[in-house]
Image (tube, rainbow, N blue to C red; front, side, top):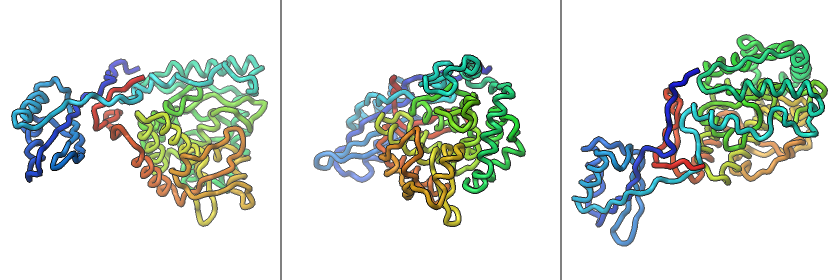
Amino acid sequence: MNTNLPQTSDTEPRTSLLIELHGDRPGALEAALKPFGRHGVSLTHIESRPRRGQTFDFYVDCDGESGECAMEAVIAELRQAAVGVVVLDHKDVPWFPRHAAELDRIANRTLDAGDALQADHPGFADPAYRARRAMVDALARSHRHGSEFPVVEYTPTENATWREVYERLDALRRRHACREYRRAFADFERHCGFEKDRIPQGRDVSAFLESRTGFRLRPVAGLLSPRDFLNGLAFRVFFSTQYIRHESKPFYTPEPDVCHELLGHAPMFADPAFADLSQEIGLASLGASDEDIERLARCYWHSVEFGLLLEGGDRKAYGAGLLSSYGELDHACANDSSAEFVDWNPAVAAKQRYPVTEYQPVYFVAESLPDAKTRMRAFCEALPRQFYARYNPATDSIWVDRAVRRTD
């Protein structure tokens, strides 16, 4: 395990300034910004707002703390030039991970997991199943960033359940899945041990995806809150369960399991446009308000989970909730389906409520995966944001352009 991980402060090391310029003298802003260059202080954001008369305010964000020598020199020089300067407080935002190592902080904040099964769960009254779940969950809960992806030695009973699901989906997958999924699934069969008689290891799938699109799987013991789950996508990390549904009901599960994750989600992350679509939602979730998290979660549901696209005039599935459910896959793609089909529009999807335990009454249909990604990016960019966030794969961290303080 990597124990030399970066320590990330909850306060962003930036300084925000309010600079007041008087009059409309040409070059006034240029002159006000020169001290930053002279003292080697990098600007990350400039925003202008007119005030009364010929007065303008400029909000400036820059690298470094206000107490540092270079920053103090800039402020002093501006004040000597009779430019009004106010050092602004950090913007308080909901806590979010800044480095992939901080996903450790949210990975075990599961809503329902392990042996705490609900009474209507098929495995609730099966002590052997509950014990097995607890063992698999313990592997996920002990996982830390930088450690080896845990291997689960699946039992003959578990492999038999996988086989039933795999075989039942096979014909429908060939008929109703989008071409990107079909292409990726063939690659998984060649490179990731995808076969009907044995559950693949998340470790192998994760390594393959990382080589293709930079996406990774991270083991998790159960459902996370929408905020925590979406935050992981910003790092191109997908929280994935490793346990399997109860053998008494191989075609039903009240929660995500390894069949849903590997047969539904994983192949799509091998497609660049789909991977980017997922990350767009994740980046927009960082520090977002509770209201925007709900909007983004609905967009995720209607695209990543239950999205459809057009292929040669026919509806094809790219959402994991469809691709891992033989019943709903046929329901959504059949010509005589009773569901409503609407064009993919994230602004509409963000308002569309959805059922969890029954077939979807409304499906959103994109023209293509690039179309789905482009529209999602435009929606995310239009959301009110306290800061702009960008993922740096070289450092596995999130860069932001404003001075923020992450608060729980």
